[in-house]
Image (cartoon, rainbow, N blue to C red; front, side, top):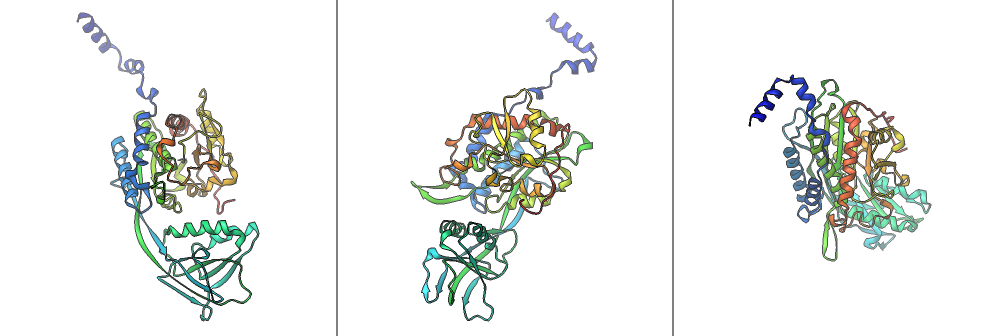
Amino acid sequence: MKNLLFLGALLAALPAAAQKKAAKPASKTTTVSAATVTRVVNALASDDMQGRGTGQPGGLKAAQFLAAEFKRIGLKPLPGKTGFEQTFTVYQGLTSPVSAIINDQTMASAQAVAISGEPTLRWTSQDAQPPAIVSIGPEPSERGKMFSYIHPTANTLVFVDTVHTKIFRQLTEYIAKGSTSPEQPKPFSTVFVLGPKPATLTYRISASSVSQPVELRNVVGMLPAKDPKRGKENVVFAGHYDHLGYLKPVSGDSIANGADDDASGTTAVVALAEYFKKRNDNARPLIFVAFAAEEVGGFGSQYFSKQLDPQQVAAMFNIEMIGKEAKFGPNTAFITGYERSDFGKLLQASLAGSKFRFEPDPYPEQNLFYRSDNATLARLGVPAHTISTDQIPTDGLYHSVDDEVETLNLANMTAVIQAIAQSASGIVSGKQTPTRIPPLTDDK
């Protein structure tokens, strides 16, 4: 007891500064919680979440779960907000099967499909204001033109050469799921017909459609800047929590759980929020966001981007499908748009001494840089990149009912999240600032 009293007196006599210097901050040994990773990804990809479909009960349940996680961690709402849910409205529409008679021949259901913003579509070749007639020729370069008509701005009848039958089937499946738009659909329609345009054309076409507003929500929280001088240098960590909801049953299973796409990335956002909250040393403001509606057009990230001044976003880490090993093996991930800024090089520099490495996107033909939620901010000049490990050309579980937690490598996934946390240290501390991406108006 005397020794303890003597030691206490000695410590009390030491200068306060010396005591602080002797104490080793716990934050230096902060690691990403494997328990949090396992718990969150299992919750998001459970059958109970019903595939987290846009505008469906499972999607709302997932948003509420994530808001509770942000509260548990101790994040703050964005300035001026009282909660973590960032609500916005989209319009979901569904067009009925088409009745189409072309040159007195009734088209089979697999040969004609429509997408419409009109409650009732009735066309005949005798109409005073007929639709525009468009032909999609057999050349490969013609295929992409089909998708330019899925958001009608004028009444258009599109004939698609049978060379493109496979793409036509995919288009039909896409339209059958219904459309989602950030604005109320315009009162126009597009009707697609599989087959070449006849030299002489008569037609009678009818269909109906419904459209309704649906409230969606991003889930957004933040850690305010520790350095007031850097209060307008936001760093965003993001992933999308939505998936496809229900699909055609396979062996009795119809729930598209979306474990890798993108419960894995959303889990990373939660785990990183927990990690940086524990460290409590971020010079810059950190914004953590789980996006809605990525799968139906990226509308969640588009809305989020409009709430920020892009000049006040230093970088964006978008995390998409990190549940399996990358083609480069363990301890690797790739960064989309690697060559567009020095973001990747800075991350690698912060990993000095680590076995982990970030590689450039190995699938440039997939145009992944503009296929995820980083795209909107990237177009505005923000060094916004997606980090992924998915071997997408050979991923047979992508957008299927078999994208389950059991198919993920959770140890590798946790290692990827830990690497992201470590690699972000220079940007989070304000010691590194990625170069801006020249603002773009197209995908080139």
